[in-house]
Amino acid sequence: MSVLFIFLGFVLLVIGGEFLVRSSVAISFRLNLSRMVIGLTVVSFATSAPELLVSLQAALNGFSDISLGNVIGSNIANIGLVLGITAIISPLLIDRDFYRFNWPVMMVFSFLLYFFLSSELTLSRIEGVLLLAGIALYLILLIRRARRKPELQADEVDPALQATSTFKMILWLAIGGAALWGGSELLVTGAVDLATALGVSERVISVTMIAVGTSVPELAASVIAALKQEKAISLGNLIGSNIFNIASVLGITAVIQPIAVKSAAILSNDIFWMMGIAFILIPLAFLPRKFSMGRVKGLVLFVGYAVFVGLAFIG
Image (tube, rainbow, N blue to C red; front, side):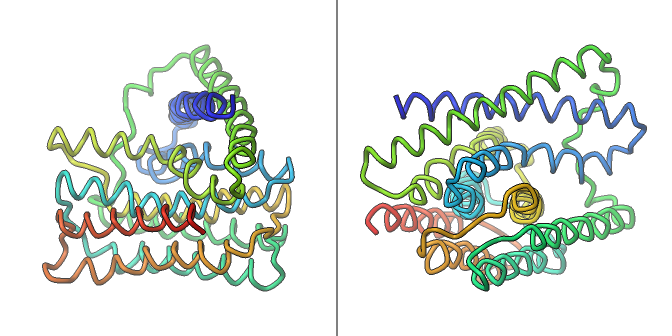
């Protein structure tokens, strides 16, 4: 039953996330927000909803390792799995904004998370507020940069949603909220049961299976775009997703329910993998060919992710 719960949880999270994004964008159009602001803020928050609901549900149920493991594992999967597979299928170009702005911000939030967790082995409400203040500052800077550089503006906002009726907005919002809540409940319950059945910790399941599950929408969209030779996800969007996972998902969760570090491996292993696979993007971006993420580099990231998953289960 645990595997069935996990599968149904993943399905509901994907459905819920899609409906929440649609309703959020439609409501934003109704509030006369520009496409740029919607793409950089509303869509980013909405696409982080599955991670948020899973982390919050786990924290409220007393499984804080799942809260942390979900975010840390998702950040590792975004780079190692999603970016790795996408680059293997269709090489990506890297813009200068990646190392001038997005990557440094991601590393600052990563080190900040490590500092908060290692100081008292808890992510407190005050620290959650600080993370949320950090994401607010990041968004302000992001919008300012996008206004100066039109090429940085998000293009994933569907203008057709501007004509959405009020009834549809409410219906989509209700479906999205219900599916996300039900999916997170099933996923956390199934993960705990599966960890018990396999004799592994909840942390192992969260940094591997749950993390991959919450990254499935990004992976599917990227693979489809790469196979069609269309514009795949940009490195900037992927880095932005990692920033949102740390600052908004853990920030909001910690404000509602402080997150305790129960497994020492989160601080001694997992978070260093998260920072390490993020750090390696810089040498990969410049060596041997500058501003290109080709198939060999993608393979390096994918193999690194496979090693991380293997060691998580072996350990």
